[in-house]
Length: 549
Ligand code: G16
Image (cartoon, rainbow, N blue to C red; front, side, top):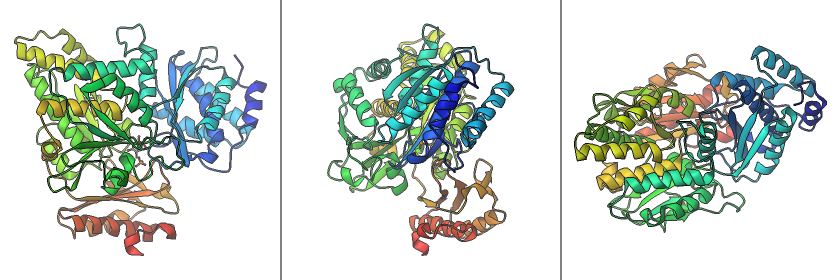
């Protein structure tokens, strides 16, 4: 095993010089235009090795993806041993290491870090890594592998796969042969686990009408094709936007982010989705899911992460009651400021609801405080967590009636169909299909659980998004000073108005969200706040919110 000052690290580091750019490990790891990421990937390779050594040789995951971002971007994030996001104290270390300007600086920062974090370099280090389908992926993987080589990592290449499958693999590898075994540690093991649980949950029920699945021309296309084979006729799926090899097609006018932000059907689906049919969109790495349908008048209706949370939480509460466990298992929901006000009201009337800052790691941690924690971001990123004691209770509980036994079995099978490591579009899709089948809901009944307040999300490109700081789960700006008061002044003019501004952690923009009772008012409020942000902070003229040019 090479030491830190070994020639190997130096020589390899020299092959991956750092450009004159400031990097930051943000909401979903490092993410920016792919051409500048080479040194970051090399250093992340080393960091992943050190993280594994620090955790006594447990396997760490590395995913190379930029998820919903355009094709020219790429990124990388680390996955901790239970398949969860990297512990937040290490995000700062990742940022520091990525910003050392020369090889000498880098080795010095590395040595200090190893000492202060008390990392025993003699420990083994194991990493499993994967990438999405972006053309920039192979070169970045090569840089990552140089990082592994530099620190002597036992690295396993999981190839081209979805982010949630990589999270699954990390947990499956680390729990293999233990009582907490998460499943077979292979892609096949993942498909088998999900499809078997799904089949048990829908056994004896009518085969649903085909589901139209928009794969965003990304890695989800391959995964969905494989999953579909395992499901057979239990869930007919029509795959679309599967053009993985077509340059520029990824996330372009399709996929979950397009649907959520434009609140429109991807144009490529306009002749495919029939009235009454269910459709859904994955994002570029298949960790987000958006459902939609055409209503009785042929109008596009979006069923986003909030609607998924409402559907799923109510179903789980019903099963818990049905199993006779309502005194023992409490279900709670976690949302972010982006949750539609109507969804928060609907859920809070029935269940405990918590609001946390954007980013799956925040939702995941908050959801761990419930016996069953349902968390979904409005953008379709989310999952359900069953606490270890709840899972134990489900496996031990003796039902007193056949009906209780059925509900209990459904709950146990739900723990298997749900990927509890992270938001997983394919697993969430099966979960939604199970609930729709059990409730005999079409999109129309599901949609009618509550009526969304009209809302609008706008991006503003500003000179420096780092001057934006928030509090109260990102619902209020504390910096730039004075801007929050002005936003509130605008909000007061709109009935049912609500708006907030926050810097994105994945794109170089500031995001503005607004909702109001009427559609034109929600749009107007969003663009007025966006204009305010632009004017107050010197935005890029090319990106001044269009309505105000
Ligand atoms: C990532 C995070 C999500 C977050 C989203 C947008 O999603 O994992 O939790 O909601 O970015 O973040 P922001 O508004 O800060 O750009 P993904 O699907 O892109 O990995």
